Length: 126
Ligand code: SF4
Ligand code: SF4
Image (cartoon, rainbow, N blue to C red; front, top):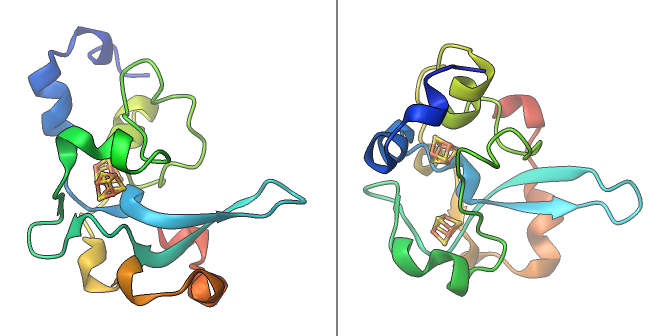
């Protein structure tokens, strides 16, 4: 773990995010195994042009599954993308090249719930 992490200010913490949008991809959990699969479908509040959340301040209310990543929970969320800048920082790894999801994802507004399984991504893609 980086020694710098606990000493970061709120501003420095927020600045770590590289706006890849990978954490905004819709995930499916296998009820039997608990395994979590990422899809190429992104939250309806994701802005494709800026790769930012259009409802950042209200995100956790509007989308209950939307997680507020903090210095305390960053090491406990196993499903965060491996290339997430926060995860890399926590694990002391260099950040991989930023790959915005806008290059390959589709809005959840355009995909029915029963179609989500057809959009599952391989985890190593993230
Ligand atoms: S509410 Fe915003 S931050 Fe949360 S998943 Fe949706 S787009 Fe991402
Ligand atoms: S996956 Fe990590 S770096 Fe990418 S947008 Fe989400 S919090 Fe930011």
